[in-house]
Length: 272
Ligand SMILES: NC(=O)c1ccc[n+]([C@@H]2O[C@H](COP(=O)([O-])OP(=O)(O)OC[C@H]3O[C@@H](n4cnc5c(N)ncnc54)[C@H](OP(=O)(O)O)[C@@H]3O)[C@@H](O)[C@H]2O)c1
Image (cartoon, rainbow, N blue to C red; front, side):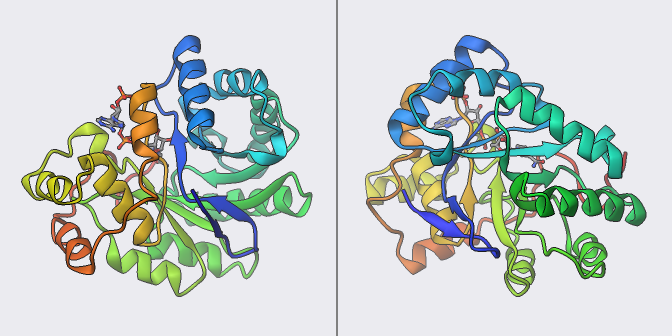
């Protein structure tokens, strides 16, 4: 396991546990405990997932100090706008049983420039007040990021986007890298639908699992990655990506699977 430095110097673990759709208290507790034992320190939730409270409760009973953890949450769609961001952030803190977040993200940019800019102003206020160590966005295309950058304030530290072998996003990554914005991959495992022949062949070649091949491709390609699982054996498996590396030709094989596939909403058009 290693950390990457964000554009403000804050260190973020390159691997975290995603908890989208983990809604059973016992499932959350099992997953969090397995992750902590396997060396994960980063957890990715969102106001939208309605499980911040469960994650907070699971972490509270662990022996790991808060300062060793990296907690991410995200502003829900209905909480965009200056005051709603500030108010909902406080609710997130309470639910997560903490007095700061490591990373707070805008969940979706939408297509309304002023709403995104007002939301970002609130994110900047939270950052200035040191209630959050880094702020960023999700699902942003250059067009959305330009709206934020033209404010000439805090440059987002992270852009968390859908990214997997069927949606590689090289141009967006290059655009963000040129501006100091770190990419983070959501649904890295295509929600479990990753058994493609090329990936199975690489798994065979490296004697790793298909999931490990994909997650290694992510971290080797400069992404932070947050696979979700509620199964301890898979959580352990997904962390087994630090003892091998993919040859450049095999990185290219995975890059070559790109078909621009979207399993969720299309950031070019999605509005709310
Ligand atoms: N910012 C955004 O808009 C956004 C959107 C979506 C997701 N996210 C974040 O990204 C995280 C990950 O994305 P995701 O949950 O959509 O999908 P994912 O991580 O690509 O895939 C999760 C699915 O894969 C299965 N799985 C995990 N490890 C596996 C393994 N080693 N072998 C076989 N199957 C495996 C899981 O099943 P089990 O749980 O049954 O093991 C689950 O069904 C989310 O949890 C969330 O934190 C962010």
